[in-house]
Figure 1 (cartoon, helix red, strand yellow):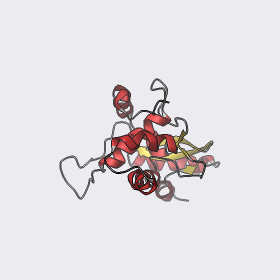
Figure 2 (figure 1 turned 90 degrees about the vertical axis):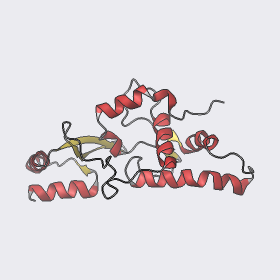
Figure 3 (figure 1 turned 135 degrees about the horizontal axis):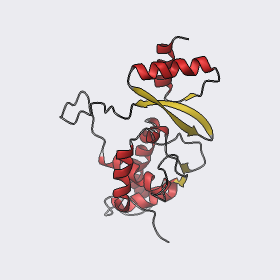
Figure 4 (figure 1 turned 45 degrees about the vertical axis):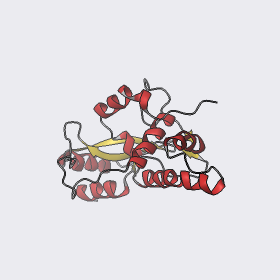
Length: 186
């Protein structure tokens, strides 16, 4: 396989197994270096894989200047849901953020529920309506790779995209750790 093909495959599949063939691994590293990217080791369910990310000294355009064709702002529900997942999956900010530890989805939803409009009645249908947007946000975050795919065990795990966050981003999370939505007590 040609080096550009290896890179395209790695980007399209988000994560790829570590090539057993040294020549293939060397080709992938060469292709990644040519486009100012890097390979990041990620663990998906205990299996070591590789993912492409930006080189540490390269910051892609964020669209922060208001170019809506480049940057789409995440909704508040998605951001708060991600923040809550981070706090639940990362109980000790002195430890590395990724891979974190699994957190019960019901605990994450329970921590999010008080953050919304609580004026609606709390019967069964109203509760589903109150948590539905958080469940939708979880599906979106899983699809984007910020959370690992749902494997049906009721647990939330940080996804491989989190492994790509820069040390500066993780330092920001550490400094604001106390304001992330925390697990409910009792």
